[in-house]
Length: 511
Image (tube, rainbow, N blue to C red):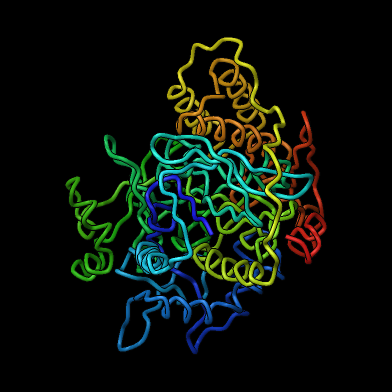
């Protein structure tokens, strides 16, 4: 068994997850309440069967993590549970206050170190899948810092490559989140879904001269307020849950304030200062380093690209439309997040569905003949005006997405983005073998399909808000937009999915 990671082992979106792990483990909570909150947040696009599978496994998932050595925060001898936006109960587990992802990552990496049957390839990039018909038989890799190309054949390939926040110029995601897994799958003809839905986290530090830094939703869960330049708590007039409304609503409200020429501030001054600094030590340290006090200063915030709800169409056990290929975590689209992810459900998804995938793989025979080759669908255009460097091309893609495919978009902005992205493709050589080149061509391919999907969905729903189609079309409830590349063409349609993408998945007896 081989584990491949683009950076150092443990470098991932999971590590940077300040928020917690949502699970209905308290006596005052139950999976059905968690399911109801998940369905409500997902704006009519959550697959109820997949979501029920997710929330019912919460207790077992927490127990398993504890067995792996994860240590969560306790209060009065019990696991402490916080409340975050759109949750009706306190059900969010945290570790180190605001370092939950880092603690989960630490415990799992420690267990990996104990495995003697596992080869770990760090600083290694997956370039494309090896395919034989409709079966994945391995992957082509660029290995180590010297980057030789090798083909690795396998009975099954699991993509767990995270999200795509780096497609936008302002994001809470680490530098490696460039959408590689989704782009790799698209080039191989694997069905992807709901690419128009990106969650913009409402409260990312907006301080000129400093990097975007996530201010966890748990801060608002503990009582922080949002104020505009006039000092008003503007969320109270927008939603009954005020600062704890679903993320898409809060993000748009903040964006409206900014579009009107104002700024938005996170206010903790009415809360106990020592308690806040102790509760959120990572955030407090970061802010202190730039001269801000979490507890006594107004913290400037703005929305930023945070979580990608779209991805490779996958069942809860990771199965995709290609035999032998599984997708887990943010790279996948299982239907559990719908159009707007409920806070802290993503760590739970990776954990629960990752364990389901592992159990499924244990039941399958992984023996294959070492055949297969890279399927080239020819989606990288020839460069007719190669005057744009790869680094400049990458920066251009990110700026285009920030300007035109953000919290609010329109046909005009999306058509402009598509035209500008095509110009980037004509002006740069996206076929290189450097890490920057690999990432740039993946970003370019995925960005174009995000824009095309956003153009096709002529309504506003969850993380996809069209100013020219501001209403939600109830006729499109439960309608997922699926994309599958065929040779030299892309087909797109809306499909009604009673189960998570099952009409487009292989039979259960084949990986």
